[in-house]
Each structure stands twice: as C-alpha cells, then as structure tokens.
Length: 200
Image (cartoon, rainbow, N blue to C red; front, top):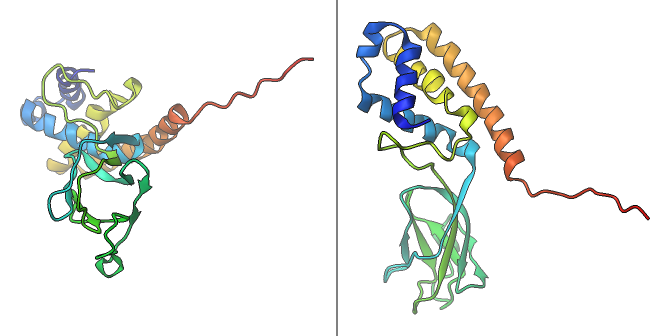
C-alpha cells in the first residue's frame, strides 16, 4: 500500500466524520512512521556500511537509520570487541581492537587510529521513513500493511480522543501482530536447509 492508500484506509477505519477531520495527512504520516519504528525490532533489518570513517579522535558518526550494533570490522580482518567502560579501553596500544558506543549514533574506536583503514559496520536499522504519497513500507511484508493504519494509527487516534477501551483493544491486537510478524520475518530470512534424500 502506498502512503496515500494507508491514509485513506485510516480514514475509512475511523468511520466518524469528526475523527476523520481531526487527522490531517501530515499527522497520519507521523503515526505511520511511528508504527514502522515500533515494528523495527520485529523486522530485523541488518545493513552493512563500508563508507564510514573515524574523525581525528577516533569517533565514527553512525547512519541516521542506526538502531544498534551487530558487528564492527577494521582493516578487512580485525573484528572489534565492544566495550562498555572507558577504563577497559586499549588506549596507547597503537592498535584498533575495540569500540565503545558514544551516545546513540556514534562510536569511539580504541586505540585511536593513526592511519586510515577500511571500517565496516553491520547494524540493525530502522525502516525507511514514508515521505511521499507514493512511498510504500517496503520493509514490511505486504499482508501486514493494512494493520499500520487500522491498528496502530487508529489506536493512537482513539487514545488522543480519550477512548481508552478502543485504544487498549487495538494496541493489544497490534502487540499480537508484532509477535506474529517477528515469526514470519524469522522464517522468511532464515537460511534454507535442504533435507533431500539420495535414492540409490
């Protein structure tokens, strides 16, 4: 479904004219993008970026769609170890062997690199935002598109208008959908195992 189709489906699901008029297109777009962010963990979008580079102090700014780190490799062959305390950092070692998250969208390499080498980052990503009317939530399987406006977005509208019974029912259905989606994505992205038999 396109972004405009998602909006039309939301208006259809609201039924009440007063509610429909209270949800202009730009608010609906925000709700749909919030839904995609809420689905991010279930969608398991993993990306690899080999074009990032540390600044002079060894800090690497991560992509805007960064959710959390999966793996970091330096110089094509050194898998960096994550650390959580600067006191564990290999400062002064002269070798890049570790990284530590530095805020929500940056990481610090240890030791600070003295020369530029290839840095590869595998990370879990948020889905792409919907912006244009023809945009489609491509990271979400098509059979789940309709739930974005009719469950998540409608739930948020009901909450804003104080209908907590409707909100609780819709958000309960949305939570169940996320569990189902996680299973579907896992099944569709797991490597295939051939179990054929040889007939002699």
